[in-house]
Amino acid sequence: MIDNPYLLLGLFFGLVLLIFVGIKMKWSKIFVSPETRRKTAIEDILKQLYHVEYSGKTATLNAMAGALKLTHSKLVELIEEMSLLGLIRRSSDTIELSESGRDYALRIIRVHRLWEKYLSEKTGIHKSEWHGLAEKMEHNLSSKEADELYKSLGSPRFDPHGDPIPMSTGEIIESNEETLSHVKPDATVRITHIEDEPDAIYQQIIDQKLHMGQQLKITHSDDQFVKFLSEGEEYKLSTIVASNIGVKELNAEEISEAETIRLSSLGVGEKAKVIGISSECRGANRRRLLDFGFIKGTLIETEMEGPTKEPKAFKIRNTLIALRNDQADLILIEKTS
Image (tube, rainbow, N blue to C red; front, side):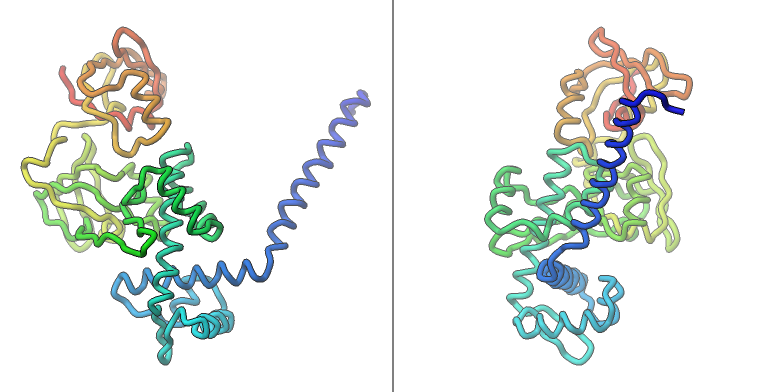
């Protein structure tokens, strides 16, 4: 029983505010104009058609309806409209992009990849959320605004997953990578692309802490699994997951991280030299670690660790710095003792 009338009044108005905010959010989702819904659906179809063509396959109505979660009748309605607009060509059950449709699709893909680049470089949002947020924002940016974003990011050529960002003129860099599932044993490769769809496979890659620029030494490869060593860890991926990772084979001169491990694996009392910060670490997080003194060549020692082996306290330049294991994973070292 609450006797304080002011507390009761505060709880009442708090409840009213929560209800109001919830209703407002709900109604904002309901009242999306039909024109906006139609435009978004058409752009999603164009983008999907481009990805299908890029993979060398043929798009069919049934496959498109399933991929885009549209009813067959709704897809047919949109396809007919797109055909009248000259965005696609339809032959029997197959669909392909026209020249203007392909240009339009590349504009949407350009915005999507620029947003992912922005989210990776300028925010602390986790990489598992970049794709979903970019999917929403790709429909809400004009070509002029996309050009401004492109310049503000330093005119990037690739998004954080290694996908090329189309130019405003529609030009796009061709990739010559191979998939990890096709690499033969004993080869050393660098990750150059990580496919962020479908979500289930992308999440497995994130869970394994694999990242762009990481070097892998392949130890085994068959039709079922790929095994490799990297940053002091041993990995085993199914070929399905491995086929979503693009790599480039390295020659002897390019291999530079044979003895590199993650700082999180350094035990209490062990010493090491900082080799660098993982390319996975970007923006403000990277600057913070550099400010802490995690610079190439710096000597470091693990002084103590928590009861669950984290956080760990590292001595660097006569200063103790505590890091969680997920932070220490981003710092690459070479043991000195």
